[in-house]
Length: 212
Image 1: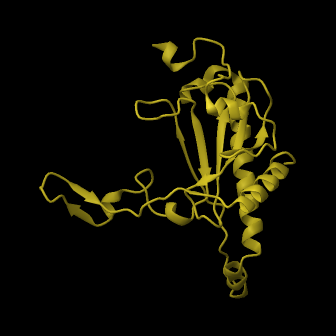
Image 2 (image 1 turned 30 degrees about the horizontal axis):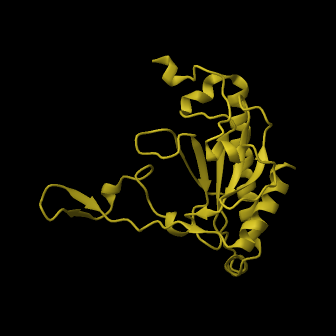
């Protein structure tokens, strides 16, 4: 049983895992799917890295998504308890990723027309908000290598979700066959960042993450 909760072998980076492969890239590497913006080190047993994702479910023009991953092929969140160094580096990576995200958001907010207009009326629109979720190995997850995403709370994702709001507070509809009930939610669509924005974000995030 405990072999499932904690890894029974030394944590390594696998050759046939795409996420492990991304972790072997140098900081600043911009790939088709992700750009590596920060690494705590190069040891697959204890180190983590952060990527900027090309695909994004937040606002296509102002939002973006960061992903936190261990260099080693960990498949369960409980594996973080394998060592104190691994857990400490997770905390460091989590803090840096979210700090960098909010720095970029704040910088972009300060030059936006909506923000400038609000400031003239004494309003403050910027809030350091984000959504964080993670996935690990499961029967329906195609990626074993667990990963944690933090993305901006805008666009399609800026709506209540089951994780933080009782959906029963929404209008409830009956199934036509009378067998159940449901609520309506807005569709969340994944879109790719434009090439120019993707590259500019990657460059700025590398600068912030590695000088904070």
